[in-house]
Length: 295
Image (tube, one colour):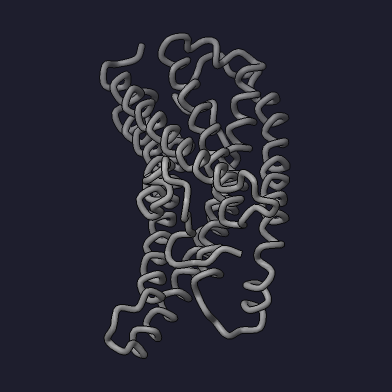
């Protein structure tokens, strides 16, 4: 029996997901309209279209599962629905994380001006590499989701009653830990590199307002926000999957609220940081945030 507090938390999580759906819809619409009539899509818009579309579908799917858990809970634990739900969530979740990581990498490449030969090579070819990076991310996410179909099918026959509100998004520890480690390490390295470069620019500043320096600071804030949201998201997942909280407990319900808030929070940061997402009706003079030029 679902308690009143659990019902309240699920309702809050649904509202958070719906806010994220709206925010990602705005980003998707603005980025797509930027590409209309263009023979070559800007790499930034390609990343944003991929990121916003994957998060839009992911949060829609989570909202649907939350609604089903409130109004028709037994349905989501039927064999075919349970397997499909976990597999689809895994694919969309990994895709969103990949695209978010690529966005951080893109910010670093476009804004920073390191002199290493590999960085210069990457900076000159990023426009051609982005489509392949996105395609590879889709394929990796799809490949990662396939094993869960067989895993869920093998263990589902032993499930007689749901043990957690989050059974439909159960993931294996091996994939979670490996991916989390890669995301955290890569973003920490990006932040460290950008911070060192920003400090060098500050030391060489002439006293006037430097747009390039401001661009670096905003990029650091954006990458840091993604890292903070991701770490919080992963901790909540870890607590839920480790079953340290009892079913429908207050702690589990709070984790679900925080879990739903993290993707929406990252979306709001992206909208806040880019004028074209805040001024959707005005599609002229769009530019990449943080002073980065299109390629």
